[in-house]
Image (cartoon, rainbow over all chains, first blue to last red; front, side, top):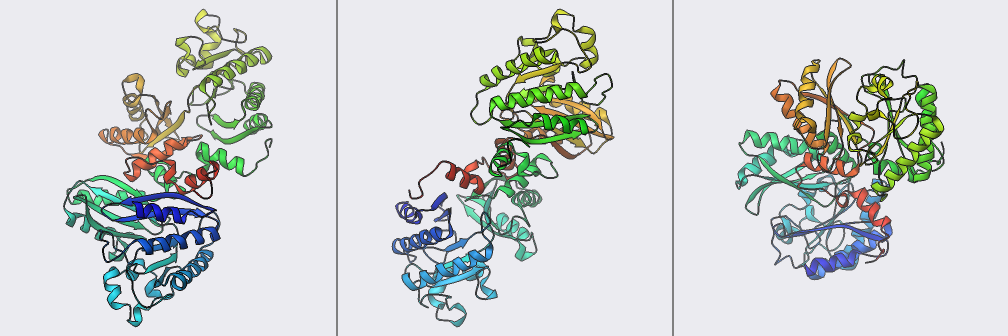
Length: 288
Length: 288
């Protein structure tokens, strides 16, 4: 935790707000969520990557979550009107700086990818740190920035993408094969739900379906939970509880609540605090 | 709608924001939700009650929703730190002004009630306009303010209470007896869920369970929907959809989403827009 604290301190530049942080012992992975003006965020991220590279040695690091380096992945996400294109440009600048000034190999992914086969995070991360160390000299593993050599901090994957929801569902079972079967049946890559990535894991001796929902406007989290509940039932198990890693966008919240309440739709204008906030922000004249 | 428009125009004093309005043909009832500084809200409400009294004649008005007068009920609800006690004091002032200046009988209810048997809205409204016109001379129906006589605008019920969620669930059935049975089994008064009031109605030839959730921290709307779904199943019918009248508090939204997602809890700090807003409002230093 001392190392994670140092990284969290490093990211907090003037103009950058640390919105959330989470560390998971089994995954041996921490997720920091920061927001702010683009230039300030970029400076904070660069410092955080530098501290992680200094403090984390991939030759020692172990955990159930796959990783390519000390800073495994840095996704820049559009918020409050910043277009995705601008996040792509920022990701490219951050990657070049990490390569040039920290001497780490950098791969661009998703909207910032330099080639189609690098769009998908799992493909870029294939084989993790250990295999990259052996293969980085191969042409197909040539980094987008930085040296084609792997040190103790490994490589950094930098990109731009829509908001991703990292979401896990624990089953009332300690049988990892059930989690794996459900993961296979719900993930897009094996013909399941679009914009869903899923793995079956055993975490704390409990079967877990670990997911990335890469576009919640296509498949929202409540739909995934309903589908997992149905699949689990077929396999004779039940959902125990879910776990949200990081943050949820407000529109996913509204959609999940509408589902629970049986409402055909539910807008922010129907939530008293949001409606009041919107009326104040919009500067609606006091007297209409 | 011309009459409702005139009432909506009247309520919008400087400093009062009309957050939401809804009109329902079958209920023949409109709900306006306004927020603002207490004094401004009080002035707007008084004007709205005056316009309703002028434009609505209870001798002609019909609808499936019970009512005692042109302005049936005015609940003052605490928001953003105003205590319930202050809403009680405001309700009393508004009632006195309606009685004195508009010459309408006024009954105080809920936290503003003058006697225990007037706390409950349904008790105050018993027999509706028509029976009140016959009984207002009786001691037990003596109004709290204004004359003990009923004109074409009827009486006004004024009070203070926690946020109430008005919420209806439509069934896939045109059998009103099923809606009535479910209403009976879920409402507090017949041993059902605490803080739930429910009626079975036929609306648009569809069976509807019409509810007031008077304290969503005790029984939240998602729990009511789950219970109705279970009761309906026992009676061989299904929920078609729900309908929210007016607004929902943010905490009820978060609880409903947590339920849909299987999360043990979900705070506003886990929703990106809310977390960002909170960080900005709190004036957290840019650099921690």
